[in-house]
Image 1: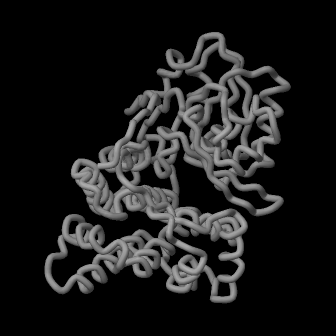
Image 2 (image 1 turned 30 degrees about the horizontal axis):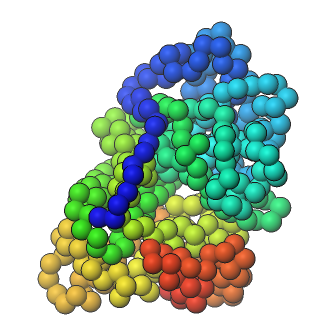
Length: 385
């Protein structure tokens, strides 16, 4: 393994009826802003449960954070925090709400134009307002990591940032809060978590035996529970294991000491920004094509993936790799996520613009070896049609 330091300060509070523990987790004198997305958190009672747990604290609300959180919306939350002299943020929702809350936390006291946080990928974030989260949608792992992705509506730029200043202080994970989610969102969560793992696992060998086995176990868990967790809406065991797998997929542990790719995500971000496709659904389209285009560079790990995750042991190296990629594609499709751009009425005429946007955003040396050029991204998009 490569030398590494692993750090994660987020406290996880997991299980049924854990929202009531907010009273002990949030400072007693905190002036709290609750951030959430649509009205589902209010309709299903989660928002009221959170407010009841916060007791007599000053609590204000900020709703309307989009599935791809926008800079423009979040800057209104920043203004509310400043105007009302609030001092603690609490995200109630999925990864988009938590991502947005991270940006708000970093932007409050940022000395320059807060968009610079995204343009510099968080390198200059020195302070952030403390915040916690109540997770209602397992998918992104944002509840236990330092990363965020924000979209600027005016330019359709979708950029990530990361900073150790924006780890949540705590995250409350109650699997029962996922029972009312639409099947589409649960399926998206399974694929999002799966591709997070693949971005850290399917690169090249560095003798990270522990990390490899950990990643493979998470992938097999998602394969096992994926179809069932979408249809069995109130099965606590399934929902709990999905929630925990999605958290572990991107809390930094399986990526510690091993190379990481993330080219699928960077290409996928452009599809979301340009066409509004759900984030996880862009990943389902891009990953199989990415593996096909880069199969030679990833050969050793693809063969390991084929054998250990899918049990493929027969055939030539090329045949085993081809079968593993096709099984991955079939798994995504079985969950209802298309793996071709044609399903979204996107054809070859869109590729020039997507590649140009990657270049505009500096995504010209992607992948675990920084050798995925715009020409490679073009080939990946062509294989995605």
